[in-house]
Image 1 (tube, rainbow, N blue to C red):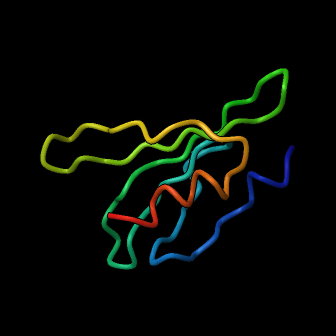
Image 2 (cartoon, rainbow, N blue to C red; image 1 turned 90 degrees about the horizontal axis):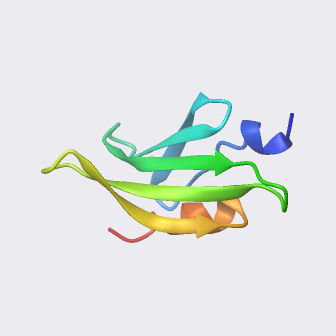
Length: 79
């Protein structure tokens, strides 16, 4: 198991809670859900998909796929 699965940073005004082995819920300190980050294992290594929750429509907006979880987390710095 990768050490990434235990990576739960709290920074940029967000926190992360692990939902399962390959997904984290991104929240504000108030507990409001901002989005999710999903680990996608692949032959070339893990990728991380960031998706922002659009609360009014209850849909997700894809923010992209990244080679590092830090880059995926950075997507949530704004907004």
